[in-house]
Length: 362
Image (cartoon, rainbow, N blue to C red; front, side, top):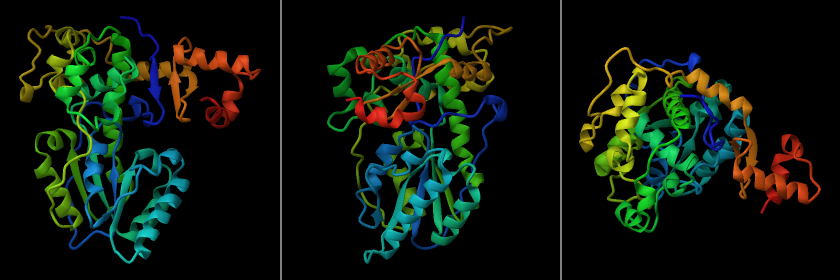
């Protein structure tokens, strides 16, 4: 199978480091470290597509917590740890000065902290910041969701559904809830991205000496949301409450129901040791019926080769100004290029003035 170019890679979701710099053959368990009393501040360390928006929508409703909306105020400073720390410090200080004495918290990505660990250590020490680490364990199911978003252009599963359940959504849009994965090279890209970003996110636990740490997996939150939220309330030292998420999961959780050629994916990726365990989903009774015997096909297992494709891509700016990396024949990119040329603008302006152009592209 030849490697092609990913259709759309969302730069709002932090780009992973090359696989060679990560451990692809094991995932560390992060030990829980509790603190007494009520938290003064906390962050939800996360990466995209892990249920973080639904989780924060619950915490936002708690009267003892001060959660900003949007839930990720540091998004504008991903890759800029000093700016990220300054924004976080401002928000924590505003909450500290408030007479309500609520615990302030928001979503933070690894790229907000990386290369600024000393600055963040000072912040954590000053505000006794607790870390809730949110990640998705099953990277294969995460990749299916990302494939739906990035390759098929279905944005319904990006943040979830506010006004309807997954069942109602799928009844209205059956084509979104059962599809065939046809571009295996691009699926390999989002699969490798899912694996590396999971490990990068868990690495937040080691970036700073956090006084208190707990983890919450997407899988546990989906299966037993009330139990998982009780653990978070206890960790933050606030009252347990019966609050519900404002966002519902958009796509079915069973990969065999969601992907019409799931058994074909089993054949293609069974040879990848780092992914194999996630091909089997006993909770949903979804299994690889006839796994291939060794020697395995490992063509799509080399994450370094997959990530190396990124250098051949072009840059596209959405109407809201978010930067995305796309293939240079992507329809959205070509439409933007045509609009720029019609207005007498040079496509090279994207390199230096993408932000300005993004605001003009409406």
